[in-house]
Image (cartoon, rainbow, N blue to C red; front, side, top):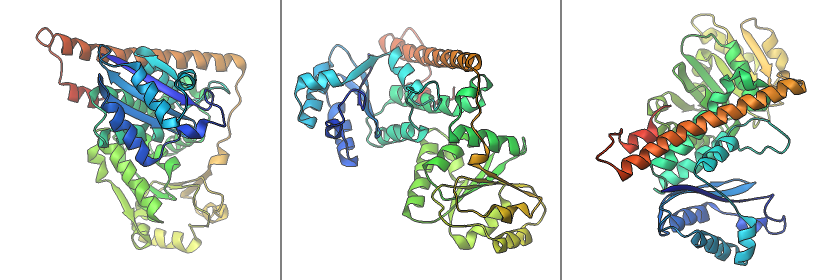
Length: 374
Protein backbone atom coordinates (compact mmCIF):
# COMPACT_ATOMS: atom_id res chain seq x y z
CA UNK A 1 0.00 0.00 0.00
CA UNK A 2 1.18 3.50 -0.76
CA UNK A 3 0.26 7.14 -0.08
CA UNK A 4 0.03 9.24 -3.24
CA UNK A 5 -0.84 12.83 -4.06
CA UNK A 6 -1.51 14.33 -7.48
CA UNK A 7 -2.13 18.03 -7.90
CA UNK A 8 -2.39 21.04 -10.16
CA UNK A 9 -2.05 24.67 -9.12
CA UNK A 10 -1.72 28.15 -10.55
CA UNK A 11 2.02 27.68 -10.95
CA UNK A 12 1.74 24.51 -13.03
CA UNK A 13 -1.26 25.48 -15.18
CA UNK A 14 -1.49 28.58 -17.37
CA UNK A 15 -3.89 31.34 -16.37
CA UNK A 16 -5.81 30.69 -19.60
CA UNK A 17 -6.42 27.02 -18.71
CA UNK A 18 -6.72 26.95 -14.90
CA UNK A 19 -10.50 27.31 -15.12
CA UNK A 20 -10.71 23.93 -16.87
CA UNK A 21 -9.74 22.26 -13.60
CA UNK A 22 -12.32 24.13 -11.51
CA UNK A 23 -14.73 21.98 -9.50
CA UNK A 24 -18.23 22.74 -8.26
CA UNK A 25 -19.56 21.13 -5.09
CA UNK A 26 -21.33 18.53 -7.22
CA UNK A 27 -18.27 17.75 -9.33
CA UNK A 28 -16.13 17.39 -6.19
CA UNK A 29 -18.43 14.66 -4.94
CA UNK A 30 -18.38 13.06 -8.38
CA UNK A 31 -14.57 13.08 -8.48
CA UNK A 32 -14.35 11.54 -5.01
CA UNK A 33 -16.65 8.65 -5.94
CA UNK A 34 -15.26 8.11 -9.44
CA UNK A 35 -11.64 7.97 -8.26
CA UNK A 36 -12.54 5.87 -5.22
CA UNK A 37 -13.90 3.30 -7.70
CA UNK A 38 -10.58 3.00 -9.56
CA UNK A 39 -8.78 -0.32 -9.28
CA UNK A 40 -6.44 -0.32 -6.30
CA UNK A 41 -7.80 2.85 -4.65
CA UNK A 42 -8.68 2.29 -1.00
CA UNK A 43 -9.15 5.91 0.13
CA UNK A 44 -9.29 9.35 -1.49
CA UNK A 45 -9.51 12.93 -0.18
CA UNK A 46 -9.81 15.93 -2.48
CA UNK A 47 -8.41 19.29 -1.38
CA UNK A 48 -9.74 22.17 -3.49
CA UNK A 49 -8.97 25.89 -3.16
CA UNK A 50 -8.74 28.87 -5.47
CA UNK A 51 -5.05 28.04 -5.83
CA UNK A 52 -4.95 24.26 -6.23
CA UNK A 53 -6.66 20.90 -6.65
CA UNK A 54 -4.92 18.03 -4.88
CA UNK A 55 -5.97 14.38 -4.84
CA UNK A 56 -4.71 12.39 -1.84
CA UNK A 57 -4.87 8.63 -2.37
CA UNK A 58 -4.17 5.50 -0.36
CA UNK A 59 -3.68 2.76 -2.94
CA UNK A 60 -2.55 -0.79 -3.52
CA UNK A 61 0.29 -0.14 -5.96
CA UNK A 62 -0.07 -3.63 -7.45
CA UNK A 63 -3.53 -2.75 -8.81
CA UNK A 64 -3.58 1.04 -9.09
CA UNK A 65 -2.61 2.51 -12.46
CA UNK A 66 -1.35 6.10 -12.41
CA UNK A 67 -2.63 6.58 -15.93
CA UNK A 68 -6.24 6.04 -14.80
CA UNK A 69 -6.22 9.28 -12.83
CA UNK A 70 -4.36 11.25 -15.48
CA UNK A 71 -6.76 10.09 -18.21
CA UNK A 72 -9.68 10.96 -15.93
CA UNK A 73 -8.37 14.53 -15.54
CA UNK A 74 -7.72 14.70 -19.28
CA UNK A 75 -11.31 13.78 -19.99
CA UNK A 76 -12.68 16.20 -17.37
CA UNK A 77 -10.63 19.17 -18.60
CA UNK A 78 -10.92 18.26 -22.29
CA UNK A 79 -7.16 18.59 -22.55
CA UNK A 80 -4.64 16.31 -24.23
CA UNK A 81 -3.21 13.66 -21.92
CA UNK A 82 0.30 14.94 -22.60
CA UNK A 83 -0.71 18.41 -21.37
CA UNK A 84 -2.23 17.02 -18.17
CA UNK A 85 0.93 15.01 -17.48
CA UNK A 86 3.04 18.18 -17.79
CA UNK A 87 0.66 20.22 -15.60
CA UNK A 88 0.33 17.77 -12.69
CA UNK A 89 2.78 17.23 -9.86
CA UNK A 90 2.89 14.18 -7.64
CA UNK A 91 4.37 12.91 -4.37
CA UNK A 92 4.33 9.63 -2.52
CA UNK A 93 4.55 8.33 1.03
CA UNK A 94 6.71 10.54 3.29
CA UNK A 95 6.75 13.42 0.81
CA UNK A 96 2.93 13.47 0.82
CA UNK A 97 2.94 13.92 4.60
CA UNK A 98 5.62 16.60 4.52
CA UNK A 99 3.77 18.47 1.77
CA UNK A 100 0.44 18.51 3.62
CA UNK A 101 2.06 19.61 6.88
CA UNK A 102 3.76 22.48 5.06
CA UNK A 103 0.53 23.38 3.30
CA UNK A 104 -1.44 23.54 6.56
CA UNK A 105 1.24 25.31 8.58
CA UNK A 106 0.10 28.95 8.25
CA UNK A 107 3.69 30.14 8.61
CA UNK A 108 5.47 32.79 6.58
CA UNK A 109 8.75 31.12 5.71
CA UNK A 110 9.32 32.96 2.45
CA UNK A 111 7.49 35.03 -0.14
CA UNK A 112 7.12 31.87 -2.24
CA UNK A 113 5.75 29.75 0.60
CA UNK A 114 2.14 28.76 -0.02
CA UNK A 115 -0.24 27.62 2.69
CA UNK A 116 -3.97 27.12 3.10
CA UNK A 117 -6.18 28.05 6.07
CA UNK A 118 -6.83 25.19 8.45
CA UNK A 119 -10.53 25.39 7.50
CA UNK A 120 -9.62 24.26 3.97
CA UNK A 121 -7.84 21.19 5.31
CA UNK A 122 -10.81 20.49 7.58
CA UNK A 123 -13.29 20.86 4.74
CA UNK A 124 -11.42 18.40 2.53
CA UNK A 125 -11.49 15.80 5.29
CA UNK A 126 -15.13 16.44 6.24
CA UNK A 127 -16.28 16.12 2.61
CA UNK A 128 -14.44 12.83 2.15
CA UNK A 129 -15.75 11.42 5.44
CA UNK A 130 -19.32 12.35 4.51
CA UNK A 131 -18.91 10.76 1.07
CA UNK A 132 -17.31 7.68 2.68
CA UNK A 133 -14.15 7.87 0.56
CA UNK A 134 -11.75 8.55 3.46
CA UNK A 135 -10.65 5.70 5.68
CA UNK A 136 -8.37 5.50 8.71
CA UNK A 137 -5.10 6.26 6.88
CA UNK A 138 -6.14 9.54 5.25
CA UNK A 139 -8.31 10.55 8.20
CA UNK A 140 -5.28 10.19 10.45
CA UNK A 141 -3.13 12.14 7.96
CA UNK A 142 -5.49 15.10 7.67
CA UNK A 143 -6.31 15.16 11.37
CA UNK A 144 -2.58 15.21 12.16
CA UNK A 145 -2.12 18.09 9.71
CA UNK A 146 -4.87 20.10 11.43
CA UNK A 147 -3.49 19.35 14.90
CA UNK A 148 -0.01 20.30 13.72
CA UNK A 149 -1.25 23.63 12.38
CA UNK A 150 -3.17 24.48 15.55
CA UNK A 151 -0.22 23.57 17.79
CA UNK A 152 2.22 25.86 15.98
CA UNK A 153 0.95 28.96 17.80
CA UNK A 154 2.43 27.51 20.99
CA UNK A 155 5.93 27.18 19.52
CA UNK A 156 8.08 30.08 20.65
CA UNK A 157 10.95 28.88 18.46
CA UNK A 158 9.04 29.77 15.29
CA UNK A 159 7.22 32.90 16.46
CA UNK A 160 8.97 35.09 13.84
CA UNK A 161 7.26 32.97 11.16
CA UNK A 162 3.78 33.31 12.66
CA UNK A 163 2.79 36.80 11.55
CA UNK A 164 -0.65 36.19 10.03
CA UNK A 165 -3.90 37.50 11.52
CA UNK A 166 -4.86 34.18 13.08
CA UNK A 167 -1.66 33.44 15.07
CA UNK A 168 -1.31 37.09 16.11
CA UNK A 169 -4.89 37.13 17.37
CA UNK A 170 -4.58 33.78 19.15
CA UNK A 171 -1.41 34.85 20.97
CA UNK A 172 -2.94 38.18 21.98
CA UNK A 173 -6.18 36.63 23.25
CA UNK A 174 -4.35 33.94 25.20
CA UNK A 175 -2.09 36.49 26.86
CA UNK A 176 -5.07 38.50 28.11
CA UNK A 177 -7.26 35.71 29.49
CA UNK A 178 -6.81 34.19 32.90
CA UNK A 179 -4.54 31.14 32.63
CA UNK A 180 -6.89 28.85 34.54
CA UNK A 181 -10.61 28.14 34.50
CA UNK A 182 -13.13 27.69 31.70
CA UNK A 183 -13.30 30.51 29.18
CA UNK A 184 -16.53 31.62 27.55
CA UNK A 185 -16.46 33.20 24.10
CA UNK A 186 -18.98 35.23 22.12
CA UNK A 187 -18.75 35.91 18.40
CA UNK A 188 -20.50 38.55 16.33
CA UNK A 189 -19.83 38.21 12.62
CA UNK A 190 -19.09 34.47 12.55
CA UNK A 191 -16.98 33.49 9.53
CA UNK A 192 -14.02 31.33 8.48
CA UNK A 193 -11.58 33.63 10.29
CA UNK A 194 -13.34 33.47 13.65
CA UNK A 195 -13.85 29.71 13.24
CA UNK A 196 -10.11 29.26 12.76
CA UNK A 197 -9.42 31.23 15.94
CA UNK A 198 -12.02 29.37 18.00
CA UNK A 199 -10.46 26.04 16.98
CA UNK A 200 -7.31 27.09 18.83
CA UNK A 201 -9.36 27.45 22.02
CA UNK A 202 -11.34 24.19 21.88
CA UNK A 203 -9.13 22.54 24.51
CA UNK A 204 -9.71 21.61 28.12
CA UNK A 205 -10.39 25.20 29.22
CA UNK A 206 -13.15 25.76 26.63
CA UNK A 207 -16.24 26.78 28.56
CA UNK A 208 -18.67 27.75 25.81
CA UNK A 209 -19.08 29.54 22.50
CA UNK A 210 -22.06 31.73 21.69
CA UNK A 211 -22.57 33.00 18.14
CA UNK A 212 -25.04 35.76 17.32
CA UNK A 213 -27.24 34.74 14.40
CA UNK A 214 -27.01 37.15 11.47
CA UNK A 215 -28.00 35.12 8.41
CA UNK A 216 -27.87 31.67 6.86
CA UNK A 217 -24.10 31.97 6.46
CA UNK A 218 -23.81 32.25 10.25
CA UNK A 219 -25.77 29.04 10.65
CA UNK A 220 -23.66 27.20 8.07
CA UNK A 221 -20.46 28.37 9.71
CA UNK A 222 -21.59 27.11 13.11
CA UNK A 223 -22.61 23.75 11.63
CA UNK A 224 -19.21 23.41 9.98
CA UNK A 225 -17.55 24.04 13.35
CA UNK A 226 -19.71 21.34 14.95
CA UNK A 227 -18.86 18.90 12.15
CA UNK A 228 -15.18 19.60 12.72
CA UNK A 229 -15.54 18.88 16.44
CA UNK A 230 -17.26 15.59 15.63
CA UNK A 231 -14.62 14.47 13.13
CA UNK A 232 -11.77 15.43 15.47
CA UNK A 233 -13.33 13.42 18.32
CA UNK A 234 -14.41 16.42 20.38
CA UNK A 235 -18.12 15.61 20.34
CA UNK A 236 -18.38 16.59 24.00
CA UNK A 237 -17.70 20.20 22.97
CA UNK A 238 -20.65 20.40 20.54
CA UNK A 239 -23.16 20.95 23.34
CA UNK A 240 -21.11 23.98 24.42
CA UNK A 241 -21.79 25.85 21.16
CA UNK A 242 -24.88 28.05 21.05
CA UNK A 243 -26.37 29.90 18.09
CA UNK A 244 -28.69 32.60 19.49
CA UNK A 245 -30.70 35.56 18.31
CA UNK A 246 -30.47 39.09 19.72
CA UNK A 247 -33.04 38.38 22.44
CA UNK A 248 -30.77 35.72 23.99
CA UNK A 249 -27.42 37.30 23.27
CA UNK A 250 -27.28 39.76 26.18
CA UNK A 251 -27.16 37.02 28.82
CA UNK A 252 -24.37 35.21 26.93
CA UNK A 253 -22.44 38.43 26.45
CA UNK A 254 -22.61 39.15 30.18
CA UNK A 255 -21.08 35.74 30.85
CA UNK A 256 -18.35 35.96 28.21
CA UNK A 257 -14.64 36.32 28.92
CA UNK A 258 -13.93 37.36 25.33
CA UNK A 259 -15.99 38.82 22.50
CA UNK A 260 -14.73 38.41 18.93
CA UNK A 261 -16.09 40.75 16.26
CA UNK A 262 -15.55 39.42 12.74
CA UNK A 263 -14.64 41.28 9.56
CA UNK A 264 -18.18 40.86 8.22
CA UNK A 265 -19.60 43.30 10.79
CA UNK A 266 -20.09 46.50 8.80
CA UNK A 267 -22.00 48.38 11.50
CA UNK A 268 -21.33 49.35 15.09
CA UNK A 269 -22.77 46.37 17.00
CA UNK A 270 -21.84 47.28 20.60
CA UNK A 271 -23.57 50.39 21.86
CA UNK A 272 -23.36 52.25 25.16
CA UNK A 273 -26.89 51.10 25.95
CA UNK A 274 -26.02 47.45 25.33
CA UNK A 275 -23.00 47.65 27.62
CA UNK A 276 -25.08 49.24 30.37
CA UNK A 277 -27.65 46.45 30.09
CA UNK A 278 -24.85 43.89 30.21
CA UNK A 279 -23.36 45.33 33.40
CA UNK A 280 -26.78 45.38 35.06
CA UNK A 281 -27.35 41.72 34.19
CA UNK A 282 -23.91 40.58 35.32
CA UNK A 283 -24.09 39.38 38.96
CA UNK A 284 -20.41 40.02 39.73
CA UNK A 285 -17.73 42.17 38.20
CA UNK A 286 -15.35 40.54 35.71
CA UNK A 287 -12.74 41.60 33.21
CA UNK A 288 -13.68 41.16 29.59
CA UNK A 289 -11.75 41.25 26.32
CA UNK A 290 -13.18 42.62 23.08
CA UNK A 291 -11.10 41.57 20.06
CA UNK A 292 -12.11 43.33 16.87
CA UNK A 293 -11.41 42.41 13.23
CA UNK A 294 -13.95 44.85 11.79
CA UNK A 295 -13.60 48.53 10.99
CA UNK A 296 -17.00 49.68 12.19
CA UNK A 297 -16.78 49.76 15.99
CA UNK A 298 -16.59 52.89 18.16
CA UNK A 299 -13.52 52.25 20.30
CA UNK A 300 -14.34 55.13 22.65
CA UNK A 301 -17.40 53.27 23.96
CA UNK A 302 -15.17 50.61 25.51
CA UNK A 303 -12.55 52.98 26.90
CA UNK A 304 -15.04 54.29 29.46
CA UNK A 305 -15.05 51.00 31.37
CA UNK A 306 -12.01 49.81 33.31
CA UNK A 307 -13.16 46.18 33.19
CA UNK A 308 -13.22 46.13 29.36
CA UNK A 309 -10.08 45.71 27.30
CA UNK A 310 -10.49 46.57 23.62
CA UNK A 311 -8.04 45.26 21.04
CA UNK A 312 -8.09 45.61 17.27
CA UNK A 313 -6.12 43.22 15.09
CA UNK A 314 -4.20 46.21 13.73
CA UNK A 315 -2.96 46.88 17.28
CA UNK A 316 -1.02 43.63 17.02
CA UNK A 317 1.54 44.87 14.54
CA UNK A 318 3.75 42.48 12.65
CA UNK A 319 7.20 42.42 14.17
CA UNK A 320 10.40 42.73 12.18
CA UNK A 321 13.21 40.25 12.84
CA UNK A 322 16.81 40.18 11.69
CA UNK A 323 18.07 37.60 9.21
CA UNK A 324 19.74 35.40 11.83
CA UNK A 325 16.54 35.16 13.89
CA UNK A 326 14.46 34.32 10.83
CA UNK A 327 16.93 31.64 9.73
CA UNK A 328 16.90 30.12 13.20
CA UNK A 329 13.09 30.04 13.17
CA UNK A 330 13.13 28.47 9.72
CA UNK A 331 15.47 25.74 10.94
CA UNK A 332 13.22 25.10 13.95
CA UNK A 333 10.17 24.89 11.70
CA UNK A 334 11.83 22.38 9.38
CA UNK A 335 12.70 20.28 12.41
CA UNK A 336 9.07 20.36 13.58
CA UNK A 337 7.97 19.22 10.11
CA UNK A 338 10.51 16.38 10.17
CA UNK A 339 9.44 15.19 13.62
CA UNK A 340 5.72 15.29 12.77
CA UNK A 341 6.35 13.51 9.47
CA UNK A 342 8.33 10.80 11.23
CA UNK A 343 5.62 10.33 13.84
CA UNK A 344 2.95 9.89 11.20
CA UNK A 345 5.06 7.50 9.12
CA UNK A 346 5.74 5.36 12.19
CA UNK A 347 1.99 4.95 12.71
CA UNK A 348 1.49 4.44 8.99
CA UNK A 349 4.14 1.70 8.89
CA UNK A 350 2.52 0.02 11.89
CA UNK A 351 -0.71 -0.12 9.91
CA UNK A 352 1.10 -1.71 6.99
CA UNK A 353 2.73 -4.29 9.24
CA UNK A 354 -0.54 -5.08 10.96
CA UNK A 355 -2.28 -5.56 7.62
CA UNK A 356 0.46 -7.79 6.23
CA UNK A 357 1.18 -9.84 9.35
CA UNK A 358 -1.91 -9.63 11.57
CA UNK A 359 -0.93 -12.68 13.58
CA UNK A 360 2.56 -11.42 14.38
CA UNK A 361 1.80 -7.96 15.76
CA UNK A 362 -0.93 -6.72 18.01
CA UNK A 363 -1.93 -3.15 17.31
CA UNK A 364 -4.79 -1.02 18.52
CA UNK A 365 -7.70 -1.14 16.05
CA UNK A 366 -7.01 0.98 12.99
CA UNK A 367 -10.23 2.94 13.43
CA UNK A 368 -9.04 3.96 16.89
CA UNK A 369 -5.65 4.95 15.49
CA UNK A 370 -7.26 7.37 13.08
CA UNK A 371 -8.86 9.18 15.98
CA UNK A 372 -6.14 8.84 18.61
CA UNK A 373 -4.77 12.03 20.02
CA UNK A 374 -1.10 12.49 19.35
